[in-house]
Length: 223
Image 1 (cartoon, rainbow, N blue to C red):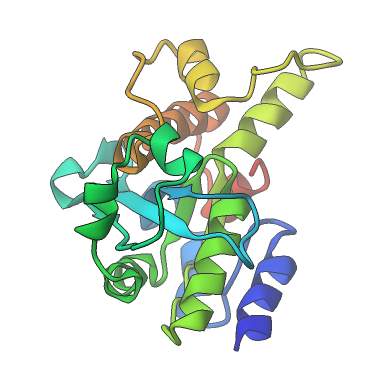
Image 2: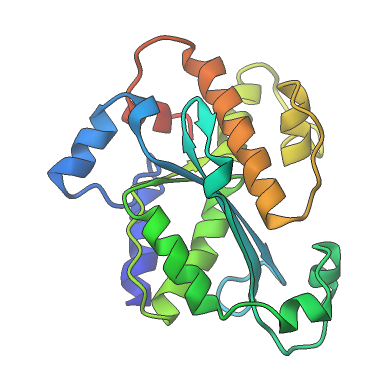
């Protein structure tokens, strides 16, 4: 099952479409981008390797452009009995937070329902999806998002059209927010970063397409 899930990722990386096999999903791709279902998400992990490192916390918030549905946001710290890692400290998580957290499979079950047929929006989306795909497969939870929307890649392409090289730090979420005149937000907290990413995505999308009729498929070409 893991190979099947990760296979969908690798096949979906061209154009960021993960699963669009049904007529309904094909119609979503061809329809107005504002009509699609979006989930902005952020993970906090204790490393960079999806095969061996753990998810510490997950935060997500639905979008219905031009609105962010803050009242439907969700956040879960994952239960762990392991000693506090440096990554956990960076993400402002204590041993008490982790020991009082939820089992990963319960958080994944809630998230899978939200992601079904949705566009997953994240800053460096392939990283987040690699961890999630591994976790969903491990816990045998079916998850079928429609596509990935990577705000980091959108910004990289936008800046590349303006300059020949990028300075270090130009693609961080905070730097992206600053360029769109969005206020600074708390960093290294999964829910706060998910909301920050949602705002950046909306700013990017409206900067790219303005009020021009644009399909989701066309917008995904920038991601």
